Length: 234
Image 1 (cartoon, rainbow, N blue to C red):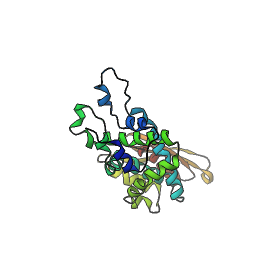
Image 2: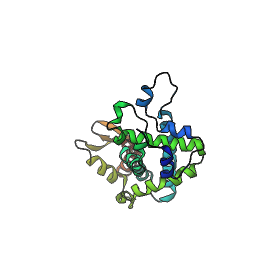
Image 3: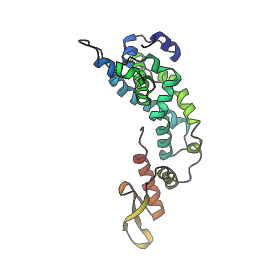
Image 4: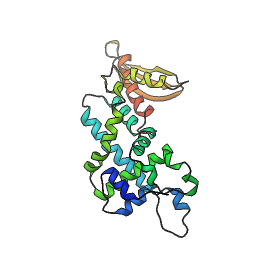
């Protein structure tokens, strides 16, 4: 049985003007499916909104807090602080699982499932945004969690040697993945050549770069690959 949502408001330091929004954020699909003849909505649409709100808040913070970090490194940091594991941890810190409305099938262990907690946390952010309309208020709530997670990512906060090194580090963490670069085009006279290089992970093309040297083209290809190999969230 879910606990009193007033306790949750005290935990998050925010009181909803529209309590129905909070209730909807806490309502899992499994609960809705067991209600007969009702018009109860699940938190799925709020989750969709909250995901975008979270991404904007985090991106803005990273952009402003780390003005010298290149795009590839910012992408890595964003992925790490909004992945399922991180969001489930944020949800656990406020005890969110205890307040969820779940169907009988989820009551046994649903309050501790990472995916369910991740979705509920995003839904909570979506509900808060609709209620207050302020990204600043959302930032005040969520950034302490994000900053705590960033503290675990000291390596990513160090000056970056190059995109190729960063990409290699992450590919090496995935058993069986093979990284290689392939020159696919050379154009121009010897004193003004341009090179086009693509980066392959296994047999999949993850990015293309153009430069005045193979090394420069490889760096640009690796930067492009980072955007695709490290998506915003898991």
